Length: 480
Image 1 (tube, rainbow, N blue to C red):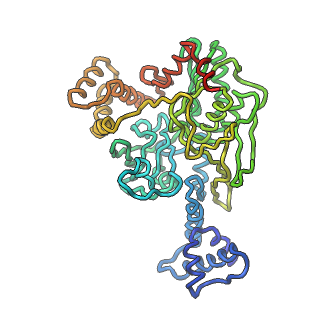
Image 2 (cartoon, helix red, strand yellow):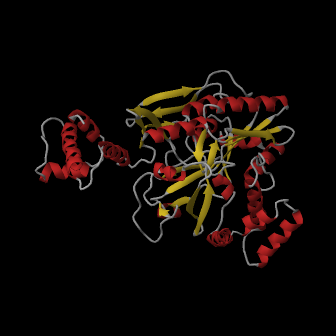
Image 3 (cartoon, helix red, strand yellow):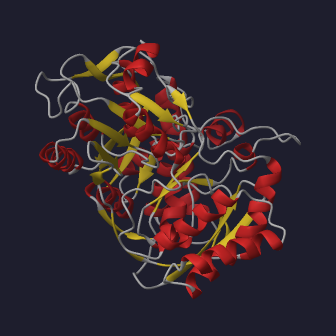
């Protein structure tokens, strides 16, 4: 290996603390001439060479390089800035183009400073060092098994996942289709559950749509890929052919995707003004995306947008644009709060993803780690601590999946009897929610579950009621 190459490789490391020790106390200390950056590069080059030559086992320069590169990005304490091996680059390409292998989970690490231990930490704070599930992909092994947004992955194949990056967890969950992996999660309500998942080739759908009623259309955007804008156009054409006069947009559980995809989609609904802008560390505007005059949907069509805590990144860009411009009325829960923009760069035969800016809504609002508040907040599953405890017992007992497996025909009488049996066994959970869990379990057993479920989706039902009761204009007037 050439000296110059070693210096370049050693430059991308996070062992700055070690380097500082070397520069102050070690006989290996390199020259201190030049700028501070140059001094660290020189010092770390010495460290790189020393480890390569003196470690008790032979170690390859590539191993040292990849470890140093990963450490550099980890030192930023930003879950969205990571070094990408050649395999990681291939995985990211699969994710954004709509097809990849694995179990079907969108995951992320929390950013920021690790909270100090105390007895009153929140659920998320207690699992700060674990990867969080943003959302399972519909129809995939993880979805069918019952994994949920907000779960934290605490072990994979029996190995603790504490301290794992998203890439670490993803690497272990990926594998040859047909092979199995065990994933253990922690869920609110002191629930710990292990799922045995059979890996599969994952196809990521972009949209699902149908008519909610004779005049109200429903469009769910599942993922922001290069194909999303065209899929949305197809949906809008179908709605127009059916004579729709109102629209429910749904980005619940949508973890994000490509910035270009959401900008093109938002432009279908807006004829002027800013969709989103990005700013750097000095709050200098780097890019500003503006709507073009042409529209794919008439301005006369009222829109209600549904959000939840699984609506992240690009989904929040759409939510912010439609809310700030008054184009839509937002219903649901506060969004996830990912307001940063990442850039993917090729580097040698690998690459990296780094946060280069934060995005701002049309009203110059950045929602990073805050989220977007809906105009009307409705939490579909807002449980008390006691209800969460009861729910945990029911989930751990695995009674609902067992019942669904034994009763595939969805016999109403058998379902009624099962619900009564659960009540007799002492499960103190609202009947409506038990029935909703049963319905969701049945939906997981089919490849193409219903596009919507008005029986148990209270947020969607509220949106439809607003249109049917002619309340939309009054609600919009109250937020302007």
